[in-house]
Image (tube, rainbow, N blue to C red):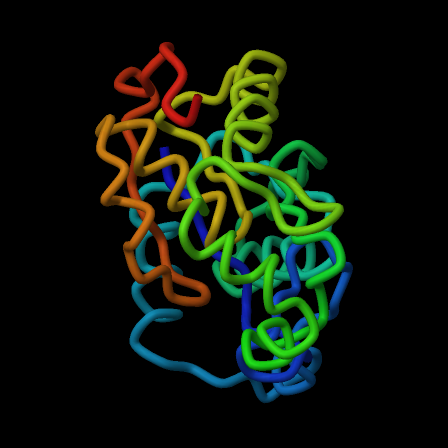
Length: 194
């Protein structure tokens, strides 16, 4: 199964977008579109091995990214919206940079840095809650290794960790509009974050 991170967003660099419905960056909204090595590799992957189905997070940055890569690769696929593939909810921290978070939430941010595997930002989700909804989406959508899911950096990291059983995968750098491969048959059924 291929996982594609959405295009760059219109948000400020370093801000926690999470479940906020921010748009893609204006440079990707109308032609001429930027073309870089990551986008070329993504389009080549889709052309050489077209996905059977295309799923997208319900957030507009993922939906617009799915529409963009399908249009650019001349593939006619319905985009199947799955809200459970949306990015982790960072609660009261959404829209803020880490510098702003540490200034406004000094105790909470220090606690989260020490316990990020088990704790949630104020009003946000834990990794365990995100794992539960990803597995619920997998059960509901039943994707195969021939499908594409357009989603978010945090969600892709969790998929990589679930496939390998290795929490170190949560530290993987996930680039915009880049494809990551996960073998759906290797997704661990046991819980990883409890």
